[in-house]
Length: 327
Image (cartoon, rainbow, N blue to C red):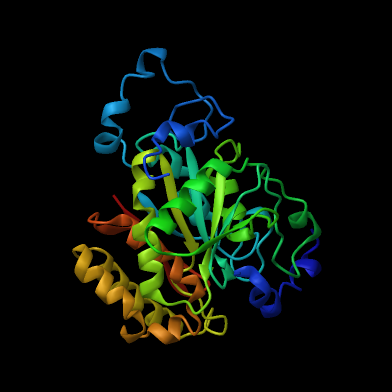
């Protein structure tokens, strides 16, 4: 990529998308995966045969999946020469993403990802067996529109998600054709490069009501005991005009400190505060529109009594950005 081409990655590019039934057991979701390995992460190593079939009774207590809210970066930032600041701007984020699989108690049977870049009137769930990629970013180098991440979908998991939502009184819709947007495939191509784990995407609900998204997460909490890794993909700071502005670092750190404190509180206190997030100091400065924060609400809802903690934090483009893990 020529430098002149990179220099055309403007704020327009960023605005366009850069920071842009109930008794089904865990084995039901496992049947949807085309990958036969059982080791943590995506390294493709095979678990010893002596471990297979002997831990089913203790899955819920010993192998409950954590839930994670992560920063997905700016557009295809991990796969291009970065020119909007130091070239190593996203290196530390990429290194952290690469370590996610090894941090899990076991290899996920599937991934359920809530991205900031999909909003629908009612919650929607991708159902394709082989979902395409949706290159919903603009103005980036040509090769970033040729990226691949051929993770299989999982109609079985999609059905389980809809069943859990239905039980909670939450309407949902099946989406058979929409591709996985960059909030899904860009960070997960770094974390799970082999694309061997079945992946389903869940939309945000228009209106962006935090209490509704906490409720969505609570409905989906049983998936944690079924080997499903629930991921919220957004950015803890997302003010397009604030990046690289001198006062933004202090503003972002103020809101970041509030988030760190709140996610670590007991569930009832945490959820009450998150439902009123806009009252937090510097909240609307950091999130003029909250679509990049709302995946955190789904993750927190799914966390149940698990308390959150900062799993990663860095200063990128002049602002503090953090990831939060529960469980």
